[in-house]
Image (cartoon, rainbow, N blue to C red; front, side, top):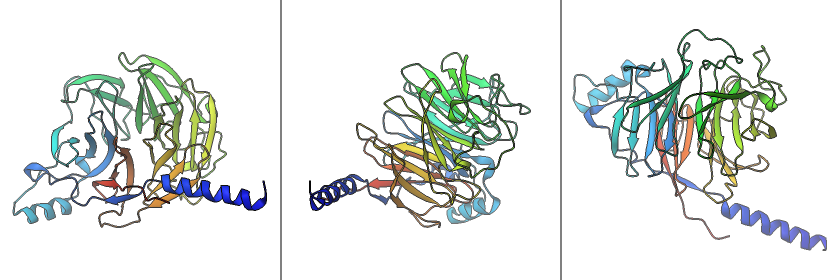
Length: 359
């Protein structure tokens, strides 16, 4: 084939890829105002269930006095209460359920972090407080089911009896195992039976035994996961994706912990790093990753096979569609995106998928 023909094929391929990249527009009306004049704090987790309901985990203890005062003043009330930690919304932004907090039989985390809805409909959540070493499982009505690990003084990445400020979890429907990104203190992935909590296995960077060395971050060749090990996602093809946030990389494994590849992201992630959370695109091959880049307060669209960034949107700010402390991302079955914000963002946003534009 002549050079002109090769260039034409490449141009057509690039055009097809561009046409397939999802585009978004913020929905400033979502969610609707909470009942009881509730106020939320840092939103530290988001998940979408099989009914396309959106689940948000927020931190009531993080609500600043000034924010509560402003909300109360706007509502003409003398005081406003924090919303419960777990909030369930429908597609229109109506609040359906709200629950959570300390209760009998389990240790509620000091600082809520990460929420997942598994294939059976159970709700999983964790925490990254200084003594948080547990992950909790509830029914959708908030009935306690299981605690894995325990609260207390942190130990190390060799300890299978407790976690180390865990960040997130993913449940594999084929093996009924829960994979936990562990975490803000430990440097590992740890796997348990999702029904009994029985320990199964652990691994660190490149599938090696985890270590807790004091290593510099911002090193995409580091032999150790940095802190935090911030997300774990399981693709339909069985590959496990880990956000090694501080080292600006996504490492990919098989479910047994054997290393497959890594996707190196931009090296300008600062101390907080680039890959904060991931969502898989809704096509059959899950060909794209939607990455919440909290350092740059933007969403990036990444080719799953090689890590190339093909699109990005968002910027730092308080207006709808901007982010302050972008933290998590989840997609519904139509490809709409839901994001959460910590730090001073304190909100959840919905981004509507726009109809594709013909090339």
